Amino acid sequence: MKTLKITLLSLTLGLMSFSILPVQKNGTLKVISTTPLIWKSETVEVGEIPQGTPKVIEFEFKNTSDKAVLISNVRPGCGCTNADYTKESIAPGKTGYVKATFNAANPGPFTKTIAVTTSAEDVPKILVFKGTVIAKS
Image 1 (cartoon, rainbow, N blue to C red):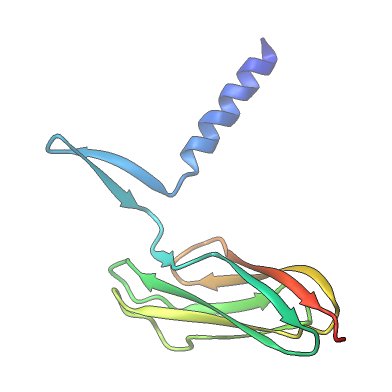
Image 2: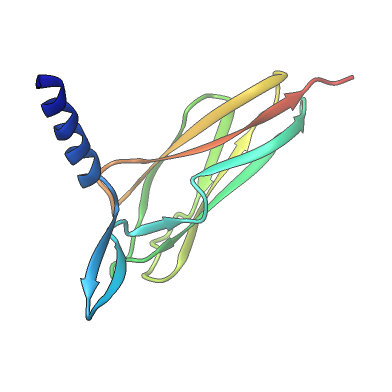
């Protein structure tokens, strides 16, 4: 019985953490996003990269809030990745970007992350890119 209570509590908390909530309005189902930034993609599969060839990966987002948003920090997960990003405030309805330049030095599969902190959200957004570095012949 205790297991069931914990499971139900976990399920309830898990459902509460979703960022898209359905709302009934005038007999139709309307979806409202509670996330002010909508990312084109939060995970990018870059495929195969030749060893020794830097790869640029771009993550784009749209500000869907009614306030300007500023990126305050972008932190790559390792020293093999450099980051660039939109430095000015992103007005409502406009887009911004985070670019990662990955140094494809070591052959093999990889998964890398970038933590993006903005004025719109309390928790950093984790962006992911992955692929395989192919050794030089």
